[in-house]
Length: 283
Ligand code: PAF
Picture: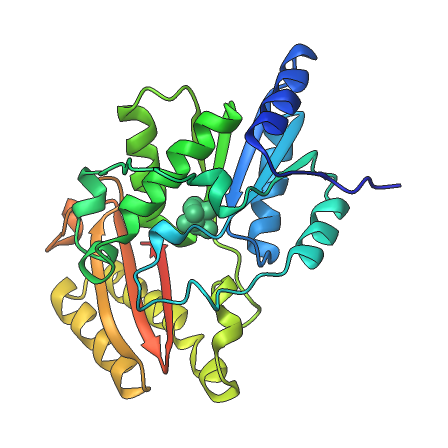
């Protein structure tokens, strides 16, 4: 019978568990999450299990990556369901510190990521975000000392930022990106999809369909600027408030003006009502 994963709430307890795993010679994988787990997270865990004998999932809603106007206080918290899901996948441990364990009184350090964190896209709309992510992810990596850490491609710019940061800080971990998991209608799975009202939920898959349509037109040789502008218009006409729809170099995230500057990645962020959705695909 599957074992409920051990829930660890203190750094001392975590160090002890990691020490035991290491003594047994096991490779360790970390899957960082903010909880409210869905099948996208499960695919990260499954990928982790293929690489490492011990899998730790962290669940921590990180206040440092939310602006005061954002949804920190209402972000879905579903610990019991999360543990039930993780039990089915036989995860070894859940690292679930509270806010004061992660950021004790007097905590005053913040990692300032560069490179892909200043590419525009997300940081143009959420300037506080990548500093908060880099700070908590560096702490999570130092706390769990994993061989591998798994991040979804859905947050493509985040994946690039974390990869750069781990390399720049000489953190001995392999960052692994895992493809986006989608609902049957193409909507990328996200913990925030629960915010969508029924009408918005019906409209939401257009985000992915628009990306596919743009990629198709680019592959057929249509002019990039025109394709992206038309895609943006289609989203606006359907009721989205567009933050960006852009073609970027998939490796550097530099803007591109023609497909020869590829490999290309198309990235989009748009709001439906109060819900902000992001998505991306390779061309
Ligand atoms: O992608 C997320 O869920 C978060 O940004 C992360 C990586 C767990 C850091 O809080």
